[in-house]
Amino acid sequence: MSTALKEDSAVSERLKTGIADLRTLQGYLVSDDLDPLLLADFRDALNRVRTVAWAAQQSVEAKLSDQNTTDVGSLLAAERIRAAYQLCRLIQEDLGKNEIDFQKGQLTELQSVITTLAKQLKAIL
Image (cartoon, rainbow, N blue to C red; front, top):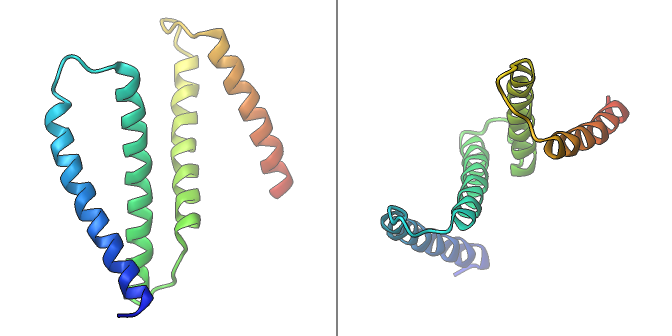
């Protein structure tokens, strides 16, 4: 068996195990005694894995159909840009609402990262 086939088989088996593990975890998640920080970390990890799985699927399907293939990294970057755009639009709406109490520290952190990002975008564009 070639090395590539062994790796594909190992990945397939690991994915099957992961799917079974997630199904088992699903039952535990209904417990009331879970640490909220642990749940937040778990959700973040699941979201990252879901997005990478989507990008990998898109890339593989493009290769199989002889379409113009895009690598997983490029697909992930495009998805992050799409999500960031949507979040920025929602934040703009929120900032216009008087009934929302914002935490100044979070707004300061957001402003800092946006300023740095804006400089990077300006250099690229």
